[in-house]
Length: 236
Image 1 (cartoon, rainbow, N blue to C red):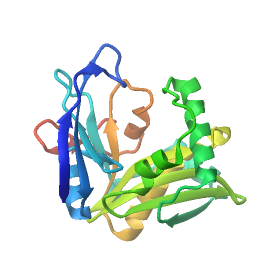
Image 2: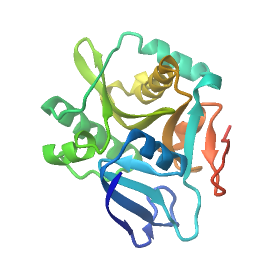
Image 3: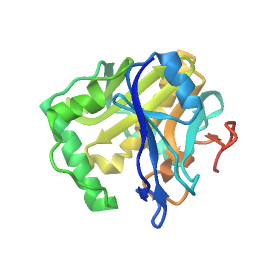
Image 4: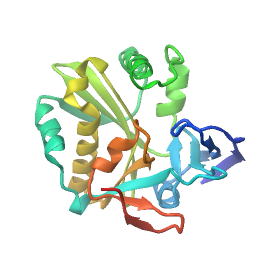
């Protein structure tokens, strides 16, 4: 790993829970091997572009890294319905790239989320900014494209580490919200991990009481990283 610099953000309003203060520790890296990133995942870090980050909030430990043990995962009835409802989608996995089609889908997804759950909408995504977030990575990453009759309806980014897959980000067509594409993407990642013989899928941070992150707890059984650095049975 080639680390460039590390810093902590000053405490500010939490994006997940009202009335809480949050702070993040960032480490920007030029290069990172899959094995090195796996060590960071096991310690509660995440990655976005070349930035590694983890919460260092002064008085809160609500953010918990959550992973799904692939061998014991069993989809519930709602997840089985989502899987069946999207049997007509075509998935292709390749290297990340920037296209107008992806930029348009990203912009429409974020505009819809701003109206639905209060995300901040910063307007159209600049191609260079998109590349910095999803294409220029410090380790090899996969881009998952979901198409319906040739039309792009979902894009996911996935990191591959020696003992698992890590779901980095996913966005989809807001007009296809009834398909539960986010659920279908996670199920696809879990299925791919099983096919590759990988034991875990990492879904990022779970925060009890946060609407936009609550879905992660529905993939059961799951495990969360405790303050002692040990993984334990997660929320039911």
